Length: 228
Image (cartoon, rainbow, N blue to C red; front, top):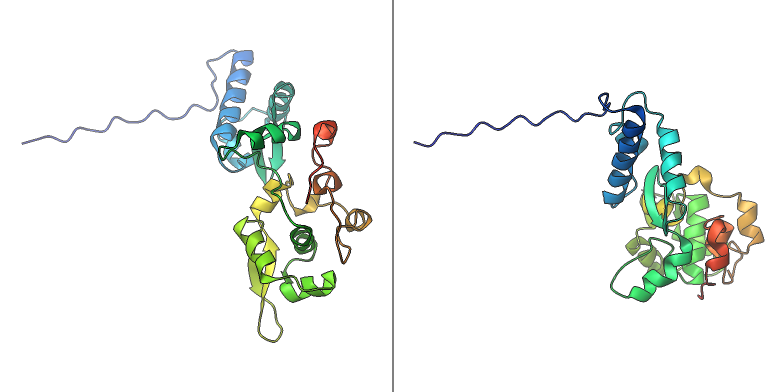
């Protein structure tokens, strides 16, 4: 008759590391936090990261030290979508796309002017219906445009609008925040900047949305202009 082996008790995770000298403890905390962010496919929240370090650890200072160490690396620590993520610097986006094996730089996908207009308008007006987007654009925003933005996970169906037919209204997603490098919707620029750049014109021209949103300014000199 076989006996069940008792499961060995897993040791409790030691977040304080009190037995380590102060300097070594700080380096270990930095390694833990960076490793957790690196291993995650989505932004890691402050609450999750705080569980990896001691109660006396100043998480903001720790994240600043990690960001400083990454300044010479081709990727950087970014506060996006309510958490933290390691993102390739814009200057290396071309190299990643040239690899051609499905790798992605996590940045803005190629969008048509109409798609760019629609997702920008939804970000500021949400929840917004397709009819509202069409009125603002001065022409119909097709279902195909909405469908592609949904496939890219930049928008999602929100509540039904209180109007005849109860059409869906659309909202932006956490993926939208991640792609555009925004911690939250509060980080969207003033709408006047969008108007000055022509993003809310009835017939939107080719515009560098990263530049309008202030993304990748440090590496702007290395970026190629995107063609629509």
